[in-house]
Length: 353
Image (cartoon, rainbow, N blue to C red; front, side, top):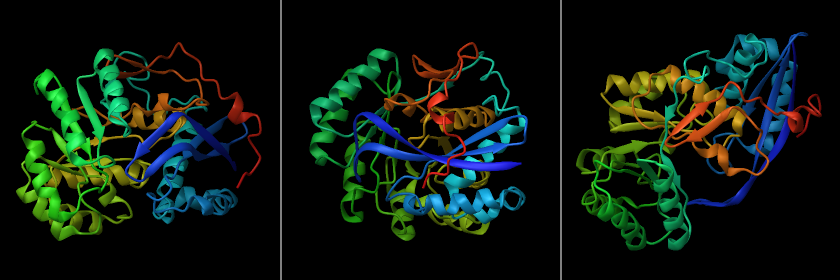
């Protein structure tokens, strides 16, 4: 088996804001495995200032992986500190096993018989921009809205959420928020009490990571269920996962294969969540349609019960045409639609740092 990789820069249709800044582009690295008959493709997509991996070191590490591909296939735990590469390698191996068809987990999803329910994601921006996004998602049929908060002042964001709740009851619209570590411990509980008045479904990562005792106390006192996301990054062993889950006891875990140890790591997190009675859902992390396709197929296999965060494939101008399609509030795989990977495969064997 031969292995190679290539860097590819995805361009956002419009600048996408988070509490960490504005994204206009994002780099992904694609790993190719060829057995002389078929080629399997996987995406390695670390996020700057969030992943434990350094995007600047991806080329060097991927070169090592490709040169020693048999070793890393046999000992994938060696990539625990490189979760996006582990996810890319898992994906490429599954794709190769299935003939390079991008069908990793054959199911009712890949046959186009069932879709995956997803939330509508509202990006940070001006109040007017966020209102436009909210209205577009509601008009498209979404009944679960996730709003990124923390970039504007709390009162402005609260008023946006209140406007939705004034128009739609909790039975009509589920509201999730993602604070991306924006609040201090001193202000978080008061903010959470006010958000509870709007019957918010959950809040992701209200305070900074690494403060397990403070987060545990918030989870104990908060009237809004708390989910962990960034807190899970860099926790790679079963013993560490168990300790975090039992110490903090969140209501939910929000899992991203590119950040949380690939499929193998996320399956361990699901196991820990279920031990403490916590819920969970899966989200993408701004991958191209190749990574999103892999995550969606795997998610369907997990028998997820609630809305997943898999709607980011529409964000890029130069994404790859794929069978993935959002209709209403569901992500579908349309098997009659062909992939178009021409831009990616044109220089498949060129190692690009």
